[in-house]
Image 1: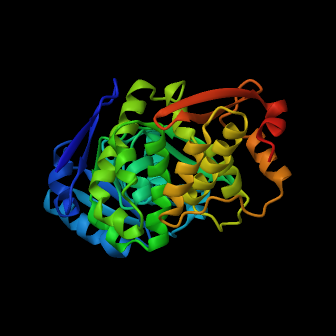
Image 2 (image 1 turned 60 degrees about the vertical axis):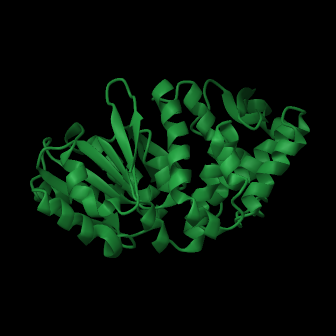
Length: 354
């Protein structure tokens, strides 16, 4: 088992990574929580696979487990579903001394995390991510949120978990597209950092290779994200680098009518923004080509879908990360050398030249 320490000043915690860790959930949770009521939350894809196993392990460790499910899909990351889960917890008598465990992918982590952040003004949270996207990205860092319509993550809060449990064996039950989607975020992190993750992804040329190196991928990607979050918990500076590919990516994802997954949209967004900065002479063409190569190698899309560019620009200009009439755009000067350029919102259309 690999243990990574996340040194958040007011809320340090650990990420534990290892094959078969789900079987030891109860033992792992007792290392950070006293016995209590636990809301174990999964979507209806993950629940049949792992929820009973985790509930049994927690029960054997003395926890009183209430297993809740919601319908799988981004549409469930909503106030309506949040309200249903909160109502269930109220009926079952949950109070501030109890806890929430998110067992599932990114939607589950965001939804259950925001529930924990807001229920009785905040109760304890543990993340058990079961998708690659959640393992390398959303389970670490404390961001929780729900969507409003097509506007992603517009209502949210920061709540650091007390523990993150990563079991790479859960990736074996993912459909290939779901596995590959998460790899989009891996390439993003690899491009941002100059440590060994970039060297590793240069050897990955198929979904099978992702499976083979899953534990090492998670460890290296999480390590980098933890370092960034430690330095900038609330996204006031350095953490903005993690938005590489997201500004355009979020726009095309929102406009795709559900046809693009988050990681796929981020892949498209990374290539699009890199090409923009290449055209402006700030990102070498070789870097943009390397990103394309690593994404295409596992079957990720890299071309903008057939969406009206005016709609994309409208979404980009209204990105929630814009401040004081400016939008911060992340680009790569080289692999491992990211930078941020602030562009006036009124000049974004000309700068992006979509």
